[in-house]
Length: 452
Ligand SMILES: Nc1ncnc2c1ncn2[C@@H]1O[C@H](COP(=O)(O)OP(=O)(O)O)[C@@H](O)[C@H]1O
Ligand SMILES: [Mg+2]
Image (cartoon, helix red, strand yellow):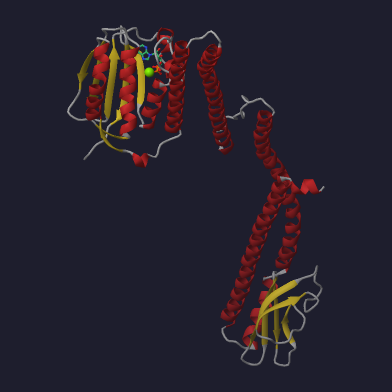
């Protein structure tokens, strides 16, 4: 029983019944009292009018003038009660028993003053003192007013029953509808906890608050799931990527321990191992910086950067490398291209893309670096006429550790493009790889900074 009291459905039903009952009662009682008030005002008005008419018909406020008028009224107006008494309080005319001569409005109960009433009667009337000591009273049957009062409490009692029943039905329907939706959410949550991670909250298509809540929760679950999957992927990738250099390292150390290995061979092994370790350390550094960029840099550290100056600077650094591979670099830059960002990271974008264009293309290939400025955007274009990337892999190469078959022999860790994409996204830009026929074309769009 206690548990029932604690449930939300019980509370909703009780609140609904209470609300229905109270508001229903208020409406019924206020309407009842208002009707009574109107009726009472009407009775008073009728009595006052009748009194005034008697005075007008009599002409003079004394017994002699009133007598014929009252006699005629008793005869002609059966709905009214009249009484005319002289100064000795003897009844002279009328259809009532004796009354004490009190002037002003009066309520009389039936046991008083009405001969042979057909039923219990309440009379409302007004008394007037006449100029010669006489007394005139005119009244009307006001029993309906009392009947109205009695009926009101009866109506209140019956309508409370009706309101309770309606409240119960309404409350049960409402709590059923509301709690069923909440229950659907908790059923889904339990199911997900039990391992059905792909389960989602069903939408009703009603576009109401519950649908909005369910939709938001579903989106949140999707995002969490994507995050968990990518985390699993990353840890798998890292483990996978670290395996080969460590295995190689172990193999070389083992070899060096062999008795017949010469000093030169040992030195050679150590030097190769150091190279491998450097590579591994570099990968760790790249992974850390990638995680840092993806976790969101503080935008307040952003400064105004001229991409043209940055590009000029970086091409100069890369010229010797390109010359060594007999590669040509064509540069097409505007005078200025301002953006808000972090120079160190933007520099890395150019460096990684130029390095790729040089490293993953054959000797003698042509590389092109361009920046163009439109009203709202800046576009960076890096292209080459090398082997390019097959269409199916154009998206995949952004993932961590992805290196295509033709690049396996080259130095690198497959994190370069992941880092470029993370940096561009942090600068609210987009990056797209397309086929340059032949070669690869990388197009970057960044929002332009207006210095006005
Ligand atoms: N300009 C390019 N031409 C051909 N292939 C490329 C080019 N740039 C990148 N790739 C391919 O995309 C892969 C991922 O590039 P990246 O993330 O920079 O890793 P890494 O350069 O360390 O291999 C490269 O291994 C290579 O296979
Ligand atoms: Mg690279």
